[in-house]
Length: 197
Image (cartoon, rainbow, N blue to C red; front, side, top):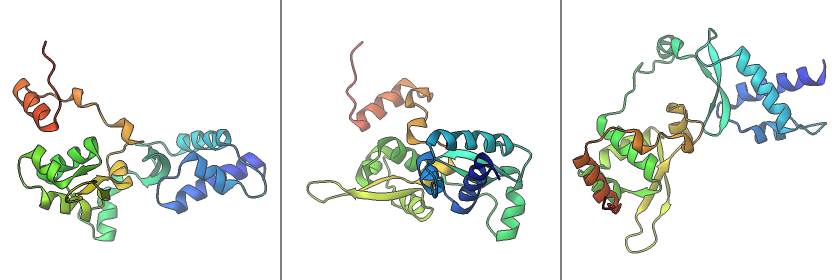
């Protein structure tokens, strides 16, 4: 077996066995046993594998770049069969309150529970609890000062669920259609100074 074929086989096995996104650097480190492996060689392997297992392709699983790394995941077309096999609800949707809370955490992290409540205008404890249970958000530490409020941020599971290669790939807030009155209220709640025109 030649070195290129062996490396591709190793990268495929690492991705299959990991069950979580692996960055290129981690793949190179794991594949380097008897010889050093460059990140360029890993990227070449990933490109070949992506051609064999494209996202949305005709295979049962696909190679995707999410959460700062690469992983094999099942094709969405097979979701109903998998949910029957594992007795998982087919559509575990988040409530509108949970989605609003998740958006606030995603864009403002690290953010505290009182800040989330202030932005939403309603108590967000239940929505935040749901997101913690589903491992979409996590505690990131505590704010300095009185009360030492817990700070929340998103998780790798959030990035995987929303198919984000990284948090820098969140759509800019400017892309969302919001009326001027709502925009002013959001600016007020977020503490953004409104520039006079």
